[in-house]
Image (cartoon, rainbow, N blue to C red; front, side):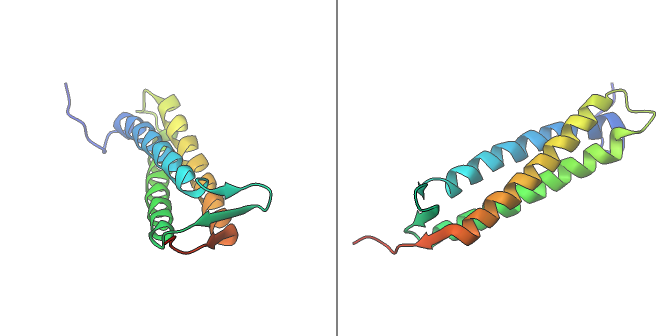
Length: 121
């Protein structure tokens, strides 16, 4: 049996699903960071630690990187004749595209609606 190699299209398809699931888990972590202290009556996100903005930016970068990897691996292996698992390619492709869209939406929401309330004493 052959080892795992990203030169083979069926391995790219499997890797795109795994990376897409990792991107979904990262998106969940980003959603927790963004929506932790949301005030729905005023549509503001309150945060008291200056490190929180850095954490949201880091989560955004990580999820965008994973989403782009899943999107690229899925797109590259989707229409290949040697790929015996094209459904994995499409699953990874759409997981990557969905996480990219949602992470940009969450980041824009945090950027425009977040208010720093200071460190409580």
